[in-house]
Length: 268
Image (cartoon, rainbow, N blue to C red):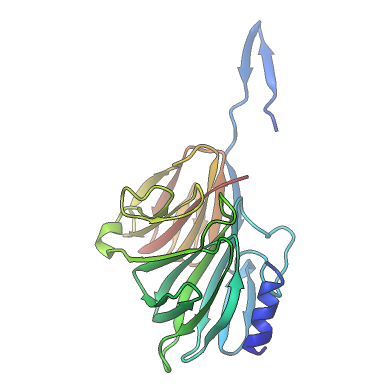
């Protein structure tokens, strides 16, 4: 598929708990942790020659009515772009867009006047707000670039578009979760127009960590970038994911050296 037609295709897609009386006392049932598992090979996939892409949620030519979004998380694309290729200028509005390069260098240009490059250990965020146009190209003519792009519905619509990017030290996420995107920037994270939090951890085999939900009512989508791990008692391999809600904390245990992305979002 030509890039122009591909981009047109993208733009066109875009209870109460019972109360139980017992011997005159009132008890409520404890909420049960909810889980949804998305195995890597269950994702949508497209090979456009210049672009190989996996879709965790319905996107472009991939549609699954059971995989449209997770809470306010709308898109998680796992892209590999060939040397010298990329996405030409295209529009967005009212979406929070986070890009996480995994390999190579990505070149970005937008209608706000930003012309930047981002690479591994950097994170980029845009609030599309009232509307922006941008392009994304592989900065190299010969080496491929790999990236994750994540879309989250905004908390406030029609804000002034904005752009930011930042380098995050690998040592600060060694065997711990480092927050890289947050509505609270006091700890150095990039700001997002939503009650959402992105955290990344590089865990040695055998390392176990608890992740505490930062805002009541949020769920967490855990995406295993590399390695293998047990998350909330479920076994995950490379590029597997699990969505977890109705809990205050989750346990992540690496069963091999692993890189873990946690995306905490409101469920409604």
